[in-house]
Length: 507
Image (cartoon, rainbow, N blue to C red; front, top):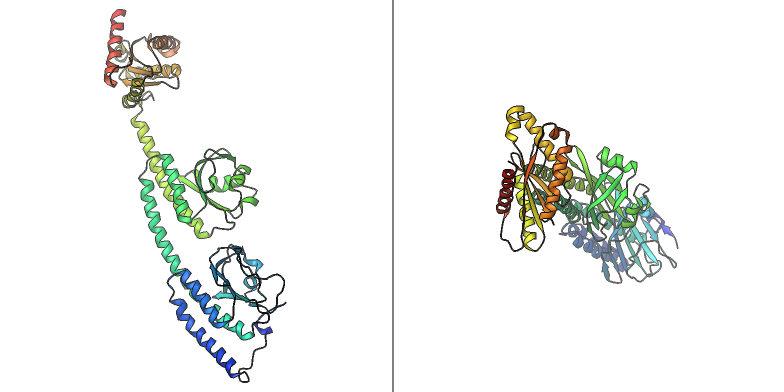
């Protein structure tokens, strides 16, 4: 067994060769000359790969064929097409390009008689395993190695220098055709991705829900980059939390991992993407995240709202060294789309919060109260208890007239604070209008409402501002009775009547 470049073969003397041999080589040269137009006429990569294989059978003897394409940036070679004993395969197997002598040096290699192991990569899904004679030639385009073409046969000493020369000529034609096809398909892909990004942009901006936007971003990343998984993370202090997760091996939503200073600096401070070639060996990846990812590559790119980093979009592949610079740029553009959508969603949430909040006291306003109470009435009609208390500040007009509206506003804010201090999480307190406030007591009855009112009166007396002005409060209680058909207005009116009855009793 030995490896040798073309010069190591003895070139046959065509003048002294047998007539049949000369004719055979002349026929193979003619076939080679015709292959250029055949290759360039292919309409897609698969068709071109098959044409290169078919062309190889015309110029050299072979039992097996492998075509590998090489990315020198990631040092990954991928078997895009192979044939063994007539069985075609597009296995997509990858190997480190620098481990291949042909890819590393850009020179052809020949094995005349190999009886033990094989020096070329064969598909794992079967094959004869007998490759005693092998030719491997580089695909060269503008002096750059873009792949390797390998043929083999089970016959020892099957190849001559002319075979290597013919296969090298075919590889030159194939390299040009493959590069042209790469450019054409790249343009087509970019066109499709531009259309897809535009479509995704429309979809993202059509939603004003923060969580829904995050989930759509994850699915869009999966679609665009053909990934095994995608997540959106949010950061707080030195911890990252999974907000949404999609894919074959999804990281559980809610997963929290401690983030290294290096990742925090890159993503959160510098707002730059992080490219992890091998998750399993990268020390900056949190252990809990590594256990979820198990193996493969990942890209993390920041998501910004305005100039603030609110989280990161991560894309994962089970294949190590899977991503390219183009993938990183594409994910960055998608994160940009997400930023606009999240900005819209955040603005909408702020506007919605303002529309449902009383600007003076910070309490829910009448609209918010109505929406909440209508839901509670629906639950009460199904059997849950419900009570409502309407509060009115006694003689509030007097405070405005004698002390001024500034002090009047201070009194309203102070009473709102007392309401919040005595409120429970399951209940809602709101400013109904003017100096009237409402407390909705979920799972409450009239007795519980009276206890709540007593606590409110005690809270008013403890409040320094309210006590200094002698502020007192009147209240009216309305309890929802099972089987009642009442709405928001009817319940408020019932509490209002009770309140005025109590005011009259005071006087």
